[in-house]
Image (cartoon, rainbow, N blue to C red; front, side, top):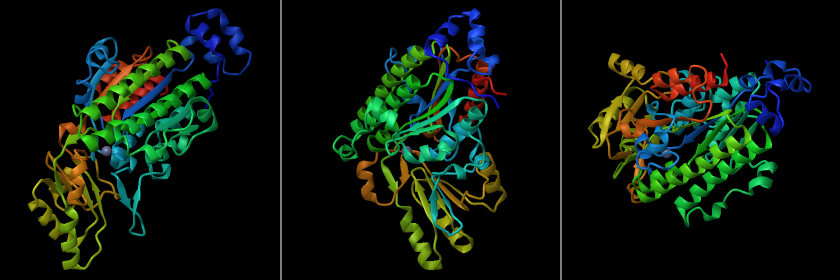
Length: 433
Ligand SMILES: [Zn+2]
């Protein structure tokens, strides 16, 4: 294991300008003599997850916006890739940061059934069954940081992060540099505006990190406003969601400028999303169906409603009764059991064969979502989670910056089809085998 060491900014700048004569100066303070040339000074890679931002939403931005079509065409690499199933937050983030599908990394959805039959969230690094990008980067000597608008995402991914920042976890240096996160009491007066403010605070914390520490680093960032606004107001072009994505575009433009100012020529920003968002106007109150089966069979049935997907831990007779009821319900596109060869094949195709995946899964058709109560549809216009809808599954993959084509990044980018391909892309840019 080698440690890259922090260099004063002026040295970094000189190195980047190609002042080869600096070799002896660099070898003086630390042992890592093999980092004495610009190409050997590791890059800083920032992986931005625009939570719940479908690939199509990027095309609605003005051409001249940082994330807009014109700018994306201008020298950076940009395409759409597919999210994993279920197309939801925990599974998407785990796929990005482990480079593995749910059946391999163990993050199979929003919740899993614990040994005591209670439902647990994926909010701990102990639940990941594969190493994260942060572990690989830290082992190779890079600094690591996870900064997130969403708490569970941060908790799940911070196992090997030197720095972990969120509204509920604010280190003193962040407080000093950017102040406290927006006050939660204001959250419901201006729902969209508050979530945009929180994301901009997260981005300000990333900037503060870049100014505080010039060492090469891998930084993971979750920005939640596209998802929060997408659920409440519907995906772009709904006004609030489009405005949130435009605000993220401006925030990332500022971040790119900061990367350039602190490590000129030696950075890369990857922008993607954990899943997309689909407009919905009809709710499926699956709990009513389940209650009927619970009454008739007398068994407890743990259930997770996750928008476009329903996870049901039912066995035997209860499972088959419920599978029938769900298959007949309006708006249900698919019911996946576990015993038939067809069900096994479908689970294999979805990369979801894992003990944490429940025996019964139902998926909605476009326009529908699973919901606790019909009342919730009054303030829900967007959902995600399904297995086949492009609006849920197609997400952006944009690679910006002077190190975007390092190693065989361009080849890997061209071959990339899934969120799980981002891990390899980052590793090659970092120069890690
Ligand atoms: Zn969401």
